[in-house]
Length: 322
Image (cartoon, rainbow, N blue to C red; front, top):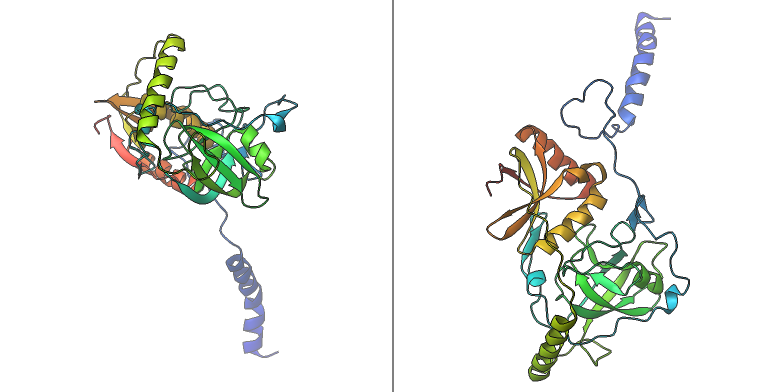
């Protein structure tokens, strides 16, 4: 065997090893903060999505009503709009400007649903979320208002009452109650393409411009009835204040209930990070923040983790200054 051939023969194992290493994709890693103390548990990955619709610790209740599919649709009626719930707000660096009066609306996009993790919590208008009711969350439709949601895969339609804000993740258009999703046939898949059309009382199709006189009269009557029958509002908890440090701001609202509802949703989405969410209030603006973190470097690592795992943008703030 010649000297040249012997050299190639000796180098062959190294060449094969390099080729094998180069063909393997890099192993995914989870961004971490400062090194934990000895014996501390490793950072927890977020629970996987179930069927594209909900997380492991969310989902349908243990004992849904047996007559779930016979629960009637929401019946549109004139209601005074909730001024606080319809104020502009920002989430993940994106500005939202809700409609402040009823008007025609039609859009197509993805619908999902939210279940037991949020059942019994406040919606954006201060009501209590009932996953077995016929309600929905929408980023900009007036609160309260009504919409027809049609599953474009099977043609099924339901009418829901909009009383909450969201969804803000996964490019979704509307979040439905468990019952509404079940009647549309999207519980198993978790999501489906839909068409959302606004509806006014007395109408069954896309909303047309309302009669302003009738709207004023009906709204006044509804407001009077609400004031007469509404129970005394529970005392509101004091505002949460920052304790100093570096935070990531995820949203800003002019309404406390909107901020609380958004925080509750994030607690379900962010899993292990959900415990570091808080709401701070300054000059009537309620900011949902994540923190505090030790320094800018740790905050930026968490911000990158939010972008990579949850597609969430955030803004770094210090000591509740902005």
